[in-house]
Amino acid sequence: MMSEESAPMRHIDLGSPPALEPPAAGYRFPGPPPPIYSCTLTPELVAKAREELQEKPEWRLRDVQALRDMVLKEQPNLRTRLDDAFLLRFLRARKFDYDRAMQLLLNYHTSRRAWPEVFQDLKPSTIKHVLDLGFLTVLPHPDPNGRYILCLRPGKWKANDYPFEDNIRAIYLTLEKLIQPEETQVNGIVILADYTGVGLSQASNPGPFLAKKVVSILQDSFPIRIKAVNIINEPRIFKGIFAIIKPFLKEKMAERYVLHGSDLHSLHRNIPRSVLPDEYGGVAGHLDMSAWSKTLLDSEEEFIVEFCQPDPLEGVVLPNSMLFEGQQPGGAAQDDDTFRGLRSQLYYCY
Image: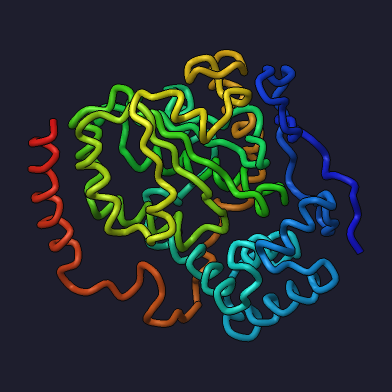
């Protein structure tokens, strides 16, 4: 049976703010789930999960056990967490379809092996320089739909600062922290990307090969629902940037991209002023990059347990259709050819 007691709270207030009043001060984010699963969803979120995710509270633990049995039967050597709270993330992300949840779980682990530059020794202390630069943060309060807002500022990064992969490491750790509360698993998140200061060097640096990997992880390898991507202050060359990304986006995800330019009124129609900082025409105070940095850095130990362990896929036989596996010979070369064409488009737009 469901319990309404919440997990211990640390660092972001989950309450939705009033329409145009600044939220109360303070930055508290829910801690990791307790060892024994106890549902923390409000009755309203239970109803939302039932309607949108086909989650039935009376069948919840039965469904978790079914997925656990699939893992133990089909991939007995997979070194993965099998606790209720962890497996629920994958079931919710795939609307309780066992087969799709199983595929997502395998993709989740496969992506780590496929991109060691991102996942090796992945812990907050190794991306402190990214946080200090102000590349990303999470706004202190969710929007009226209960969705936390991941704020990215790619213009803060320059190609000679550090490898682009470090930005991906910071984003991934942030997503791992965000997905811990059950509220996020049901409500999803919103991305706000501020392209102020983005020039040709930032636009062309990742290239389609890395862009494809990033999109594949977000769409197919991580148990989170990205409900909207709001782009603001995008330069003319963003058409070239989006041309790199769009071929890898699923139709539903592509439709969730909203380009606002410098029109803050357009942004406010999608994200209310009550949860936005002053810098984006909001009333929630100045943009504070330090609070989320502290939240991540304070979670060092739990990420060491999660990521600094032996390869979870060692001894696992994966199907040929697995994400990132079995790439066709010459795939990277084809990506390079595509990149040369897109790079010329970037120069033209710039």
